[in-house]
Image (cartoon, rainbow, N blue to C red; front, side, top):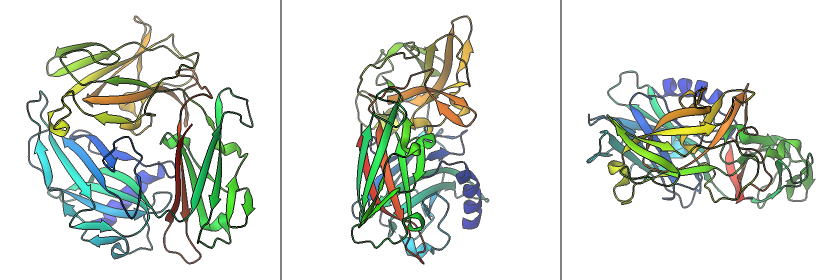
Length: 411
């Protein structure tokens, strides 16, 4: 069974951009609202200190029928391929493929569902090594044990000190449309003789797959290395995210134009948005989201599912198709979030079924394999973006990529 899971997930991993973490629902007909929460804070990236960590993986199965879901944990390399040189006992204390025993049926909701929650570490399972981890969910009653969902997180042993700097004065423009990142690494107690072979360093903007780059140091110094004036570390600056709240289905909320009931769902229509031509500061969560309702109690089982209608008022835009993007859809242009153009209303539209809560989102275009937002939301150097640096180390003869350095900042 494990070999089957690994072969399927290896094919999925090929499409994953470098070290970007993903929550992936494979059974989209039955599962929704997959979320991985680090340290009880849904807004935090899922990168935690190995000495003090906790993560909760939750999802909804859209019925009240009982299911026996199990989880399988794999250690992965820096590029999220499985760590083939490790035995399970090297990275896992306890037994793999345990049953998810924490589940509860929705209560007093128009759409029934059952919420399942997995908390790690727990009495059956703990993790022993730093690095990348993938959790695969499958149904015990399925003879093939096909993966239904995967969730990913990272554990770091912060041996190296990582400094991160972001500047709007870049090597290609001055305080206009881009931001440039510089990284300084101190090796600490680790002996690094060949950084090009022993280190794998990734820089990520806003936890986005297409904004994840692998870099090599261009300056070596005693006890460390620097990454400066590198073209790959110049990022389109983007713009602040749009946002809305669905806290109460019986009245309009933040940036909701109207709320209506059409059997069998509530429908929330957002205020129309137009392509951004200038920068306007606004606090956002860089694409993150929090599922909750107005009472903020028993959110996992009392929140409604609502069809959210997104609108981008514009003439037809040149270039590729337009998508709604956020962390809640893996920060990637998925077909379910592709907008269609309404010629009569002269706007792009899409309706998405979401669980109640607070959501950030942006409008992007997919042009080939490039995701852009210059024509939809604009690129402005003042934008408050989140950047992460992850440094992996494999010593000569090492068996896996250790995550030994991490830094996170917001411009």
